Amino acid sequence: TRDGSRQLDIYIVNPDGTEKKALANSHYNERFIAVIPDGGVIYEKVEQEGQSNIYIVNSDGSGAKALTRGPGIKLYNGIASDGRMIYTGAGKEGDRNIYSVKMDGTDARILAGSIDDEVFQAVTKDNKVVYNLFVAGRQWDISIVSADGSGTKLLAGGPDNETYMGITNDNRIIYMSSNMKWGGDKKSDLYSIKPDGAEKKVLADSPDPEIFLAVTHSNKVIYNRIAGERQGDIYIVNA
Image 1 (spheres, rainbow, N blue to C red):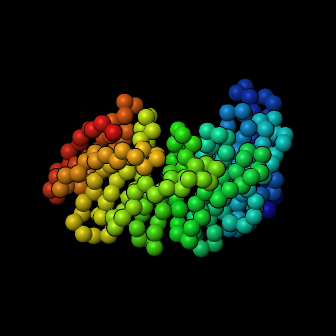
Image 2: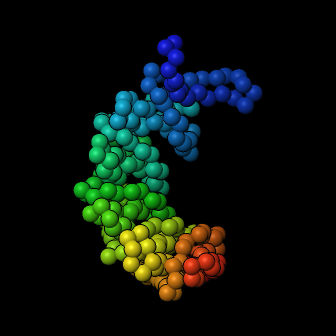
Image 3: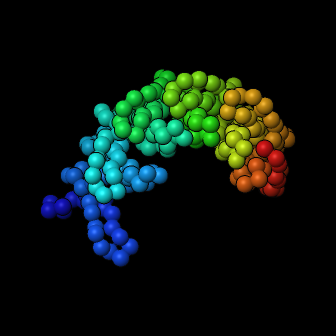
């Protein structure tokens, strides 16, 4: 800009450099987020310190529309299979809640809005949102809710920290149960569970800590087992 400050705008251009068009070039900072299947571009507009909102614009620069409004920071999380956008809203105190909205900016719904901190993790194949719930400032639980805000369910909770790790191709949720963060016996185990809370399975439950590494395309879980103070072994197990 003329005063020497930096400003982020968004443009689109052909690979040969022709037909450059501005998609978002207001006096605010605009940051690219994603291109959705119909060709629309989702971006974040930082409107003032402590406030940003999420917008969508057609790839020809027309039809720019706000998907979120109001104070606070909005963080894009993803698109559910029913077309609703999932996003996190963070207040001035840093507390985070999870919302969904239609792609025309209407019908905004609260998916997770407790007094605790909610952290988005994934959208499942059956259109549910998985998130971690930071309970009382020190305990992680895992909950799930439909993208329309219905059917909230606690998937994993208790005295230990339950942390989302991944999701398999057959739609099983992998998570780690651990007391390592808060002391104790330095133990962590791995589990899988269906999005409806059924068929919880123990994947790794030895006396040693097990640390999640990856999910394969064939629905197997790879993990480290920390044996003693210096030995780390690698295992694989069906989810």
